[in-house]
Every structure is written in structure tokens, then in C-alpha cells.
Image: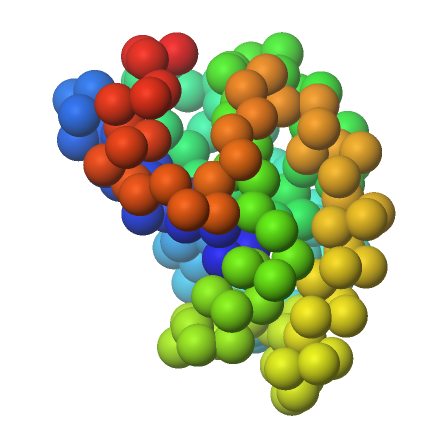
Length: 160
């Protein structure tokens, strides 16, 4: 969350001349509900089930694409194994401090961050990264990206 996955994904897809899909947008379009609304109605576990179904549908599609995932996607329902089995994965690794900075100034509402002060946000990010790192670390490619610009990443990432 806040690592620049969607920005980089769109740029990579353009560079590689293929489709780009943001998993959260795909879920919203297929359910006709916002992610926030899905969380309200079904809780996180209900959202994660919908997310899993959408992820598998996209990964099994024969059309090549760059896919941007939500920050929690790799951590649930054996998703990271499926991602690695059916695609090539990249983890854009940012420090908790940089993620806090980006997320604090973001205008994109994120259900799991709603109502948190900046200190609560940083604490939450540190805790989540500590838990999620075991899943993120399974990615086939890990890029330390605190200070790397999107243009540099496109040059850095060969067509995977």
C-alpha cells in the first residue's frame, strides 16, 4: 500500500505494450461496490475471498498484463504461491518511514488506515510490514525503491 505499484504498473504496461489491471479496481468493477463498501458489508474476510477469486481469474487469463495488487493480497489464502506459480512477481520494498510519508499525504481512502494519526499510521505500517515481509519476501524480484523514480524502474526491470 502506497509503494507506487499502480503508477509503475501502468508505466510498465505501456512500455511493454500490454494491458494493466489494478486488482482493487477490477474487484470494484466486478462487484459494483467500492472496496470500502465491501469491507463494511462483508468485513475483511469477505473482501479477501472476493479478492482471491478475482486474483485467480486474472492470473489464469491468457491475455498478458501487468497486475497491481493490494498490499494485503499476497498475505492471504495462499495467494503468494498462486502468484508465483502463475506469473512473475515483483516486491517494491520501501521503508516504513517512506510509506508513512506517502500514505499520510495520499488522497486515496484506504479502509485499513481510516482515522489514524501520523504516529498511529507509522506504528501500523511497521507492524504490518513485520507481518507481511514473510510473504512479500517470496516475490521473484525484490527492489529497494525508497528513492527510485518510476522512469528508472522501467529501465531497471527487463521484460520479466
